[in-house]
Structures are given as structure tokens and as C-alpha cells.
Image (cartoon, rainbow, N blue to C red):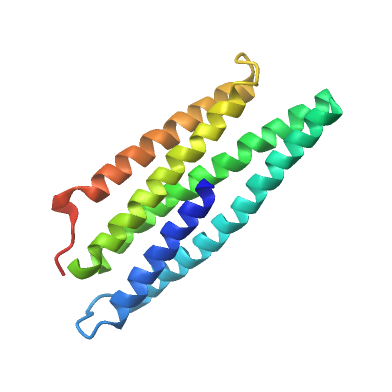
Length: 175
């Protein structure tokens, strides 16, 4: 349930931003902070919906296999690939949100933001395992396979790169 982990990660980003905004010593752009907190909240809710979509896609795939309907299996398999890709995209976008949020986060909350980064990067990488598993059932010479593989590689690269950058000790905010 990578989508649930990513949803929790963005929920944590929202919490950190709301707490930072309530501090007496907060001197940043309150409007931007609120925008980021709202984006984290809506992203978390979106990922929770994606978790439900992922379960439904898997159930549809299983049902199509029981029916042995080749067309239905192909369509369900595509959906079982596309939904995890949406989850991975949303998790990587969540890492961007963490990067923007970092300037608002005081040192006392830096560990919470770091935990959100770990959850989001891990969710992106974990959901790509589902993509890999399902992609193995698609003909490797198809456009769909090649397009998904290219996007999968890019999302994995971004998740690793962004998380590493955000978790560098020199990147922590000492506000």
C-alpha cells in the first residue's frame, strides 16, 4: 500500500507546515505557507483515493484472468500499471513540496519533514515494483512497454535524487 504511505507522508508535511505557521517566531510568507499546507492536504487525499483505485485495479485484473478474456486481461493489466504510475508521480511531486516546505520548517520539526521525505521516496520506489511486475506481462516491443519503462526509470531516478538532496545534513533548516 505505497499510496497509503505516500498519503501519510504528505499528511506529515501538512502537519509540519501548520505547526510552523502557528509558532510565535514565524516570520515567513504566511500565504505561501498556507498554499503549501493546502497542497499537502489535497495531495494526501488524492493519494488515499489512488490507494482505493489500486485495489480496484488489482481486483479487476484478477477477475479478468478468471474469465480468461484476453481483451479484458490486457485492459486490466494496463490499468494495473497506470494506477501505480499515478501513485509514483504523486509521491515524486510530494518530494518537490517537501523541498518548498523546507524553508518554513524550524529545526525542531526538521526530523518530521525528513520522515515525510523518506515515506514519499519509499512509496515511489515501492510502487514502481508493482509497475515492474505488471510490465513483465506486456510485450517488450510495444510502444506502451517502452513508454512505461522510460517513465518508470525517470520516476525512480527523481525519487532517489530528490530524497538524497532533501536529506543531506547541510540541507536542514536551522530556523
